[in-house]
Every structure is written in structure tokens, then in C-alpha cells.
Image (tube, rainbow, N blue to C red):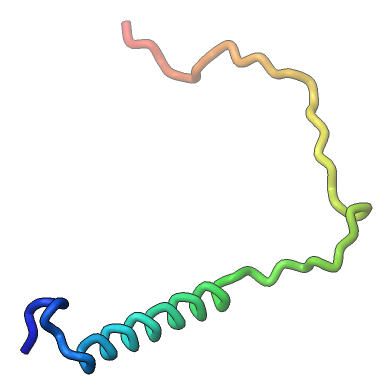
Length: 67
């Protein structure tokens, strides 16, 4: 058994490359599968625009005082 990457033979290097390749493909496949299926067919005209309303002033934090 090789305990150093420097003294490893060709088969060990090949195993490392194969494991890294399989792990990379797995992560990429999971990322593609986890995407949301957004509907990109909507045009810019049908998007909803939210406009800001009047400013609101909060005068109380809603906490009770203990006397």
C-alpha cells in the first residue's frame, strides 16, 4: 500500500482520477437535477411590477414596560 502520492504507481493515480471524475459528474448531475423549472417563456411585458406605497412611521416597538 502506498502512503504517499509521490511513491504511488500508475494504477493508484488512475484510481484517483477515476474517483474524482465520477464525483464531479455526480455533483454536476445533482446540480442540474436540483434546478427549479422556471418558465422562461414569459415576455417582459407580462412581468408584475410592484410600486412603493406611502411611507409608514412606526412609533412604538410593541414592547411592554415594567414599572
